Length: 133
Image (cartoon, rainbow, N blue to C red):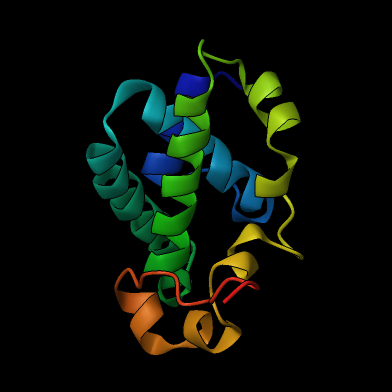
């Protein structure tokens, strides 16, 4: 499946939900960021993800804080590299973004914060204090 087909099917809600896991979320954001600004990516990806979840009978799965936090992280990582990377290069250089079980957000957020209704509905700024504080 080409990148264009992947985004087209994601936006149409026709990708198989069983094969749309964390890595595919990251890929979609990465692809949006190749064509749109961060703000446009946040808007487009968030709306597409809500539609995708609804089309697959799970409209309550959308989580704004997780969605936006990953978009910010992916954007930063793409901008740190002096040249555009292929998807394979991005994955190889950013393995910490793909570990869902021990995800990178645990470094920034308290568990209770990410479980909150507020964090599901609106972007909540990181609240985890650094170990040095």
